[in-house]
Image (cartoon, rainbow, N blue to C red; front, side, top):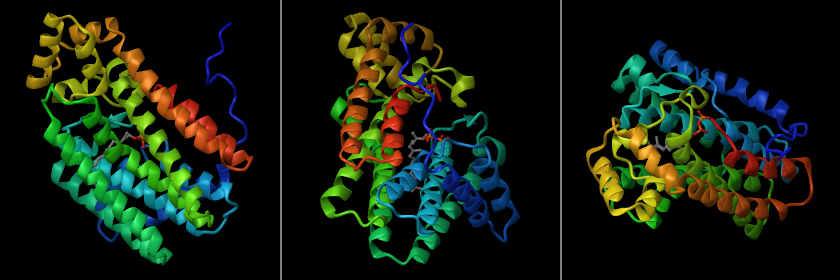
Length: 327
Ligand code: GRG
């Protein structure tokens, strides 16, 4: 029998207890005097989520022997920033489903979603100040600024079938990989890593985040709505030129290429089954997964440079799981 790369049972999680503490802290720090904020932020935070970014903070801190309370605060901060971006992103994309339930915008409306996103984002900054370290503020201020740039770049690229792979990769490095990078970097900063080691940890985060978004874009074509917790085919509906479509256009016959071009320009979902057939037949899905695997392999090399520990093993395991995931 061929063993799937993720069929091996995961070793005991070195940050399991700390993740529980982070969850408790997230709930505590969500508190607001305004009832609607409690309701909406609770709605999205309690819907679960994989909590990958806080896990990165904790695993890198653990890898450098840092067990201080500030690592929990930082882990909660990156999850708040991530959640704020999700609230804003679902409004921008007009998404209806997230984490297996109706999005906050579908349930409470766009205005409330954007404003509660602002609350979470500014709460994250209050928490950062409480850590009282300029380097932490600098890393997170830069990261959030780049995330916003990435989202605006993506907006400018909508409905553009001539987008280059390079420009596509720039968007995903900004909008997604940057927060992974900041999370990994901050774990190293807390652990007192030297500058070169900090850079290597940041590289791990950037490559893992890139692999993660490549798979996200892949799952929008080959995933399953129930497993994913969000609607498949949304990217095509919006006319978002992601790697599966860009590669399919490179490889398809002229008539099929024209068909995909038009779907990107007009943004529509009716033709999803035909587009999916071309995307599948041209091998664009496998090629997207291979691109994700390459990024995950780069991340793994960075993890292997860390001293041996259970945290290092968990970071290597994340590289496997980020590529072979269905949600
Ligand atoms: C508020 C700082 C700020 C910026 C606004 C809207 C926006 C600018 C940025 C959006 C960036 C974005 C949502 C990128 C996609 C990231 C992504 C892959 C989300 C899915 O992450 P998962 O799978 O989600 O970790 P869960 O549900 O598991 O937490």
